[in-house]
Amino acid sequence: MTRRLVLLAAALLGAALWVAQLPSAVDVGPLPGQNLKVRLAVEVRFGGDYLVEVSMPKIGNGIGLEPHDPIKCDLSVVVAKAGTTVYSQHIDVMDRASEIGWAYTQQYVGGHSFHLSHGMYEATIFAAGGCPVASVRGASVTIAQEYKEHIVGSLLLIFVTWALIIAGVLGLVLLEVKRGPS
Image (cartoon, rainbow, N blue to C red):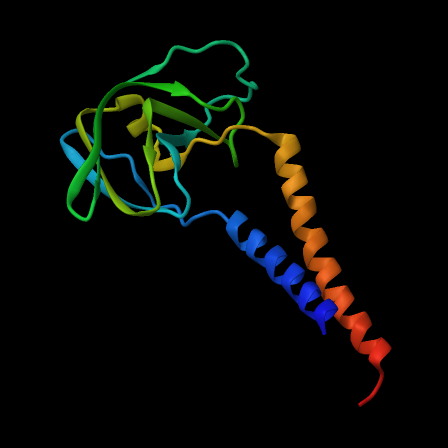
């Protein structure tokens, strides 16, 4: 009986670790034009540092490894939780965050990163002067979590997660087979 409980606990712990690794829902909106604003829902499952990220189509076929000038923008960002402002900033420059983006896009980030703890937030992005280069390219905007790369730690967490799930489920199955028909 205790082996069965230990194996069940291992499988449930592995499943909980797997669910915790799933990304939060991300709200993406069009980059607002001059004197317009967009509101985004920001769900934070685990506290962390966040940035304003703009994604736009890549121009040209080059990889883009040479340095580029930052994109000039005039954006204001206000992040609120339950109607109370928790963070605000003005962004006047967007810097490239990726050399090669997903599906022929490039990502740009602006302003300083800010910390959000668990909860639901509403981000309002107002474009006073706009972001002409990004608007012409049909950019989208989101509030994205700033990830620190910890490759070894991430791989170890994935390995432990799946090892717990497989060991727990396989152990329970083998215990039932060993026990035989009742």
